[in-house]
Length: 269
Ligand code: JA8
Image 1 (tube, rainbow, N blue to C red):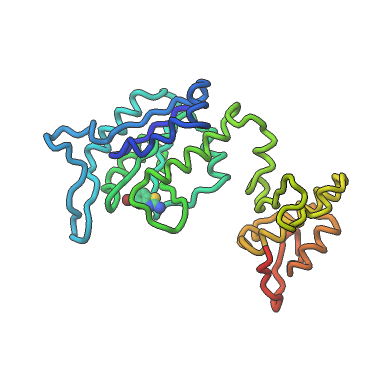
Image 2: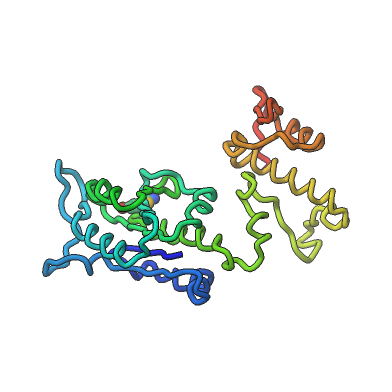
């Protein structure tokens, strides 16, 4: 996979040289380049921003340096399908694990890190002729620029590339792989500051352990992220699974979970 990141603060992307991502680069699984937007300016002051038309606070990123940078990167890239251009923005589509899997299938990803009040909208319109443009948000909060969002998205995507994460089982077992939050984990000692590890985990009964972990996932998800249960496939639940969901205030109707009204809120997740 080829990843290009464009930023006026390329040093912010230094963590991409480290650990997991740096290893993927050394192993030849990833070709990652960070580009300084100012290298694509032509004026003496290397200007990347200007005042907004229509007035208002702050500055807007000028169109031409972005067009020059993106054209240069597209020409250097492979001539296959259109590269995907990811534009971090609080106004973007919410990035999630399913999108990370989808983007991990692409040949080339380009990340455009905006700063100030954002990038001149005409860049986004023009880019749609040459790239598959995906404005993306990590969540409902505002950062000073796209760089930190890119660090998170690149890590989420690169660790899914074949050969990057050592044990592929840890990919299927992890949080969100089945649309639920992860179960709690414990390690030695079995008693720590008067707190015991749940005894079922010491029982050696692997069927009971798997069920206990699944039920902990249900409890946590119902307490912390009930929104995730809206899309949960309840067609393959065991009797014990249904009973657990019933205790949490959910009934199964047509293979979907439905929260019973008048049920006290589960805050024990
Ligand atoms: C921002 Br400016 C700017 C550019 C991208 C992003 S992504 C996010 N949450 N905030 C701000």
